[in-house]
Structure formats: structure tokens, C-alpha cells
Length: 127
View 1 (cartoon, rainbow, N blue to C red):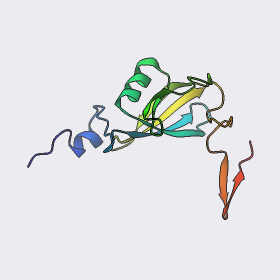
View 2: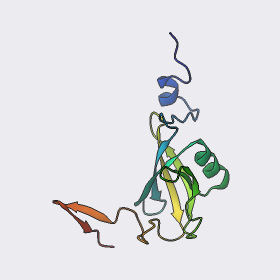
View 3: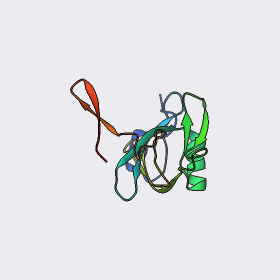
View 4: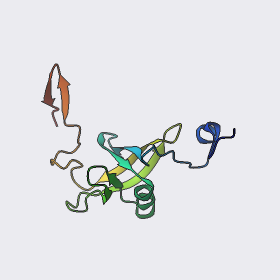
């Protein structure tokens, strides 16, 4: 029986962009600061969010909790200008290198990763 869609070899060795969305139509997107390489946030993209991101150069994501497309910064103004998108080996995850216009986290922190696990507790990471 033949496989439907691109083969693993095409995805992993070819030059065509063949995003592999999961069973619910999402890709994981890790957003890093284009200058510092600090991890800013992790979110999900569906086909529409990926297309809008590529079209506008501003990061768009799919909100699993709200069940809809959203542009990062649409209410806060803290947008993410996409500088580069890296694609992992099997094309099911992305690293979005972006220039942030303000804090990336809805809490006001520069990054959503502002705490570290310290034993059984969370400790704030120094700025």
C-alpha cells in the first residue's frame, strides 16, 4: 500500500517545505529573540496561522483555548516581527526567530520562561 502525501525521505532530505501538522492540524512553534537567541515563548500554528505569518512577517498563532487565530500583540501592541523561520528535520516543529516589540509574555515578562524549577518550587530567573 502506498503512502499518501510526502514520504519521510522527501520531508527530511528534500528542499520542499512540506509542513507536517499533527492530528488536530497544529505545529509547535518555539519563538526566540533574533538577536539574543533567548527563548521567548512556545505556541502553536495551524495552516492559517503559518500562512498569515509568512504573508505579513508578523507572528500569528492558533489559540487552543480560544479555538481561533490570533496575532501576537493584537491587543498589547507587543508584536513579533519574524526574521527567520527554521524547520526541524521532519517538518513538524518550527523555530521562529523574531524581533519583539515589547515583552513576549502576557505577564509583562520579556520571556514566558521567567521561572526555573528549583527542587519542588519555582524560582524567578534574574533579568
